[in-house]
Length: 221
Length: 235
Image 1: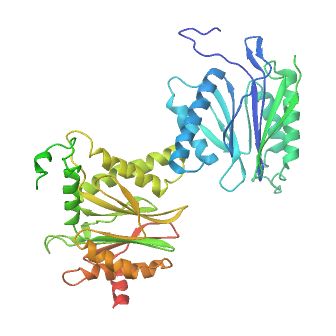
Image 2: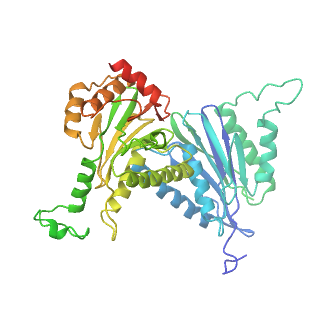
Image 3: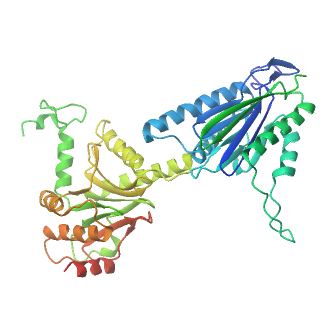
């Protein structure tokens, strides 16, 4: 649907995933930008670094997403001027929630996943809806391929219920390398069946040593 | 007072470059009851005289030292009602900060915002400056902190400070007694001794108020019984 006065949104597609570990966080998104059944570009980053410890990946209407990223970056700059330090990831999570709800009656068409390191250095992932409802989780997927990705992540990463008898151990902690491999696998799978996901995968890894970026090719069809 | 012909309007400076209303506000503060604060190595103490206008006043209903947040407390010298308005505004600002960042507001940020409010009232039409100076005591990730905020909106961090009637004697006393490695209990004793210096009449748990905050980051006002215990230790 083209932009007009009564429909001001577009969906540019794409999938975003994040996985939190004991001392790292992996945030990944494909780089395809679509409209309808066409591709605008195969090389568009949906991932934005907000602070040294906090990265935002968003899928949906990239026009709104660009505005949202600018909004958050500006608020973060003011915070740095006033506090003489960067915002923590949980604080940025709350700020994003408030920023989204502020436009409750004309929402940002953005489906966000925020990933980073919390105040103790542990990985954290926050997942959002379009109007700011959020929750801290161990892993999440948003976007056009999220329904294909989430069941796989649940199968691999979900903790067994504490109500089970006999009691089962919590999931063994995932290493950073295993998390990156898992992300590559789920994207390869999502690319097979979701037409809006593909071209290239961008992976951002945050840990105590800083921020690292990796790329992987995906199917271009 | 050669400047008085300019003191009817806040938006004009007097020829000497002063904002006379602010000078008057500081005079109001200077004639208020003495209050003081001391920053220790592991906490902060603030204290004030609580002289009531008559023995018929129910002193248990009066509380001059108040909480701005669970880890920040405040005492004033000057006009009580003005202080209540500021405390109210500051509490709201602290809560708004929490709603935005889900983190308790740092002491420096709350002091800055409170000071900004006080400055607004020196530059807006139809209002007068607040007739109080505040001593803000808090404990956050940067440790124990003590700030003084004046009617002009300027604020300073102090290791120890006093305001109100007996300010010069009290400050001299504090300068002699203050050490950087004081513990909170020592600071409370020193605060009591400083109040005692200029106190008219018999000092007791009923006519002074003391608030403390330690490494537990919970600001609380001492009960009269606890104050009496400290007084006994001092004597």
